[in-house]
Image (cartoon, rainbow, N blue to C red):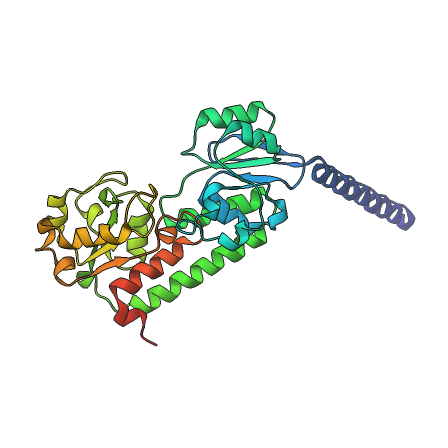
Length: 318
């Protein structure tokens, strides 16, 4: 009887080992055959292996990808990667020779094994590239800093570099925590009100990343308080009514036709604004657009910038 029981146990163990061996082989087969991911629009993207010729298609995607993968895995960056006014990766961009715009012919010519785009980009472009047999991952454009972190983690997973994504997010959290610690003693009713100027006027209301930058920097976004959306422009009358304490002025001229210093001087001397606190206190500060307009990990630098110009007495305290 004991021999029978022993035989049953041995057979059972053998079957278990065989089963485990089959499962291991199956998992190995799946690794060899590639993997699937689902993008921000619910499309299943099939990849045969970790992509080695990745193509981002916006400056924000450029910056995220440069932080996640080695440069040799990037087929090209966008033309803005070389722009000192908008790029936070100038030095890295020098090591990636190809620079492109959102042009189907130039994208297809590079034969990337993955194209990464934000959902604000042309659906027609995405369709053309997919029809050419190139995998395209579309991510949801972030409107809050937490969503920027989410996109970074999603892209890190897509390209098979989850640990690098985690490191970037941890560094973002560290910087945000440092700002929050310095500003923790500012009462809500003493937060300063700011207006961000573009070359067209006050901008970036509800739903904009700038609005979330303001929350993190403990300031009040005037455009949001009067109900304007992210693409709306404040009138002069609305700016005067909001009476902001600080004007955030642009440093980058996208048109290459505007004298930025003259633009600032014109705002400061505008008769319509002479009753505004920011003008009276001469608090017109130029903050790098490459931080303010960022949709990548560098957005935390904008939080630091805004907090520093608004509350130097807190931010510069040891």
